[in-house]
Length: 133
Image 1: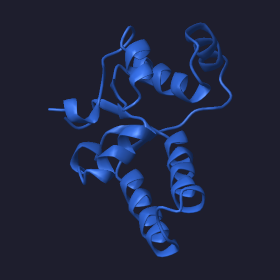
Image 2 (image 1 turned 120 degrees about the vertical axis):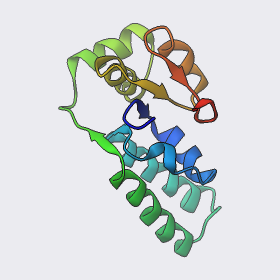
Image 3 (image 1 turned 180 degrees about the vertical axis):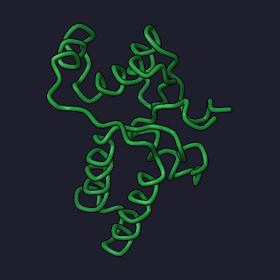
């Protein structure tokens, strides 16, 4: 199972919530995921006030550890190919970046985003975290 999947931020967060860390190790994500996870933590702490400052610190460290255990796909941004893909498929740049890299590297895209799975599934295999073997 290692090295065959590209996880987006939603699937990394879902894995952490379910305490399913093993599927993430040695698999892929984008540098972008760290920013998306940071935004999720900010929203939970400061907008929804569902976690306190101590929990926030602990979760930041947890997600940093998770991301260190994953293979990070880097790229130059903005990318014309990704902008074009986003425009053609009516996706956000972020979602198109995951789809573009899954296709480019022949990886299965793991996302909790139903719309991204539906659109992306026309080009690559796209599954939810609970569909992993």
